[in-house]
Amino acid sequence: MKQKIFIACISAFLLGACGKLDLNPLSDGSSETWNSNAEEIEMSLNGLYKDVFWPRDEDDWTDDFLYRDVATPVTGATINGETQFVQDWWRNTYKAIARANNILSSIGRASGVLSAAQISRYTAEAKFVRASMYARLVSHYGNIIYTETALDIEEAMTLKQEDKSVAMPKIYADFDEAVLNLPKTYGASELKRAASGSALAMKARFALQMGDYATAVTAAKACMDQNVYKLHADFGSLFLSKTKNSVETIFGLPRSVALKVTQGDLQNYVPRNAGGWGAKNPSWDLLCSFLCKDGLPIDESPLYDPRKPFLNRDPRCAATIQEFQKPHLGYTYQPHPDSLTVWKESDRKYVENKDTRSVAIFASYNGLVWKKGVDGDWLLNSWTAEPDKIIIRYADVLLIYAEAKIEQNQIDQTVLDAINAVRARAYGVPVTSTTDYPVVTVTDQAALRSILRMERRMEFALEGVRYMDIIRWKIAEKVLNTPNYGLLDPADLRTKVVQPGLWFFPQTPAIDENGSANLTPMYTAGLIKQVALRKFDQTRQYLWPIPTSEVLSSHLTQNPNY
Image 1 (cartoon, rainbow, N blue to C red):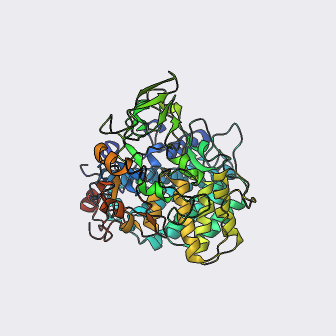
Image 2: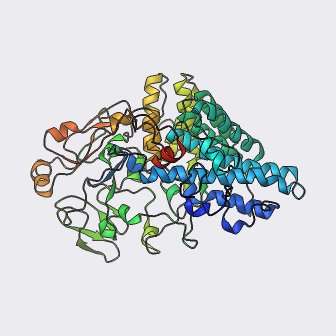
Image 3: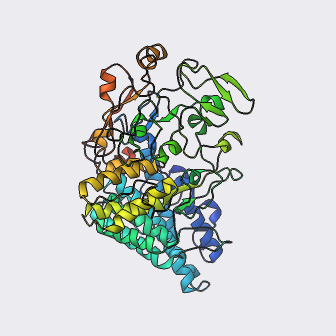
């Protein structure tokens, strides 16, 4: 069997000589008898929580990110049916679907051993995973192959794509069954698996992505009404390795250094002084999007000082992006071209500053480094870290609810309460406070839509959320067709920015209704430089292409203009 059947959810090494599509791990035993008792079913379900089955959209596909002068297939508009992640997501997602279908088709073998309630719970868990997988496929690829049964190869080759309007009710039905039959919570000694709230949250997210606002509101509200989840007390600590299984996490995957399931690519996010490369950075677009403490964007607020861009900003700004002249991972962080030395805490002395381009030419393309989730644990265990992989959290459900209500122009106090709850937590104050954070009170649809979009950007940076936001809002064609800007080279930087007293930002950019900054005037004035050119082809990129191998071998219809 020479063809790779991604629809069948297996790559060539799993096909072997079988004519039946058996996707259980080789350790699962015979496919004819497996899943006949609780232990075997739980082993099969455990396989559905593999990290590879739960990828998150990459932040470097968005306007929140700068990686030197590198463009990704998304931001360079080179994405096609042979792009690696396009193929990997399709293959691995269908692999998980096939495993879920295998469980569902074989679970009846345990009917004489397990109670009806046990079978309902295991079935619900498999359907939660299947629904989540199909939701990902539909939101990224559009019209996809939908099957609920195990297939032989001949059957797989005859399947046709279904319109998303046909697949959506089936996905909703799986989520609904999961809601009915999964527990709301798990005991202290139990493994934390998908719960009914997980199904509600993922259903709400999918419905929002599909523009089904009524369903999104209903699912999000039901999740909120469970009173199981709440916002983590401190925004910054939520993303650290030491924070495990937060009450805010509705669905996520644990990581473990001991079990070698860890977060990767750490050195690119750690500054050079601390031993990293500091190569992957927050964009200036992101820095400019954080509101000031009066709730206004930087081009409207009298509190904003472009010379001190972190002063008087929403607390999530400094919690997400490392503030200048503040300690970070044992060193004072300062990218200023004249700061040739910085303070090293452990040695109590000044050392060479490797985070300024005056010392290291590949440092500080835009002067910014990530702070969110980055702590001293990243420097231990040979550059491995184990923060929970959060797939969806309660703040997202609150803002999904608010957005779906806003889009239907059903604006009431519950909408304001949802946004304010997220914002108040960022300030570390009760939502009932009226003076300690900028309370949202406006009820105009357009104004509130703008506030909601800015709130999501401040809240979810570096969490794999921004990409589907700009796709859903149809603003990718705007925000990804602008350059990524950065600092001038050291000599020009001193002459044009530092000496005239314009460090760090020589001008205050205009901010649009989506929270996006117009940095072009600074570039035109010669005060900043273009680091990378971003491109987005609006005629095709709002959907991903179907993998080329699928189109050629399985005769699927390619998405337009690929």
